[in-house]
Length: 281
Image (tube, rainbow, N blue to C red; front, side, top):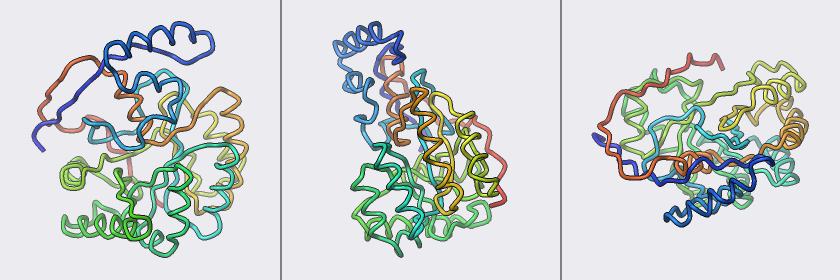
């Protein structure tokens, strides 16, 4: 992919803190007048599209917004008992999240996949076997992604739009392959409680609450019981602070809505975000 075409649409700098509600409303009315189809939804981010916007970047670890909105993501499921418990927690609070599922698990538990989608969550590709992509050939990477995608299509007639590399093992060349051939932006994270180390539910809660920030993409795993135990308190504390939870694609759409007006064509350049050190999961 030699050109990344960005169709930026002016939306101004509307905020949604209580002190800025009047100016935010005025800004959004002006934005609507200029033809931005997303502007009217910024006070309700959960109504934004649940697919990546046109001109999505090749990789994200967070997005640039000022509103207290973030995305909570869960890797490695679905788990036959823990994921349904998590879905109950989310449903009670009307929270939408993004699940990066392993293809083999999706095949084994199709009803959980169907429930995720029915309740408004987003599902991303996390490979077929949870392999380290940097240790695989291009042909093996294609197979891992395609088998996982096929499992989601078989389970729920759903094609994923995002990829998260297992262990965070990734490089720029593989990001480009996945973006060009599958249309997948690579989704990393900006907040990691390292729940896979099982530090205890209270520690997981504290790390997520303290790390949260506007535009954050937060990481956890729905295959560890202490993580599930940490979620009610974490969600309730951040909701009390005024945060809203949306899917990763909705968060991407919020950032897109704040791009400058006009069409900007940029030649493909190396990704500038630093590839994180793989996690020893």
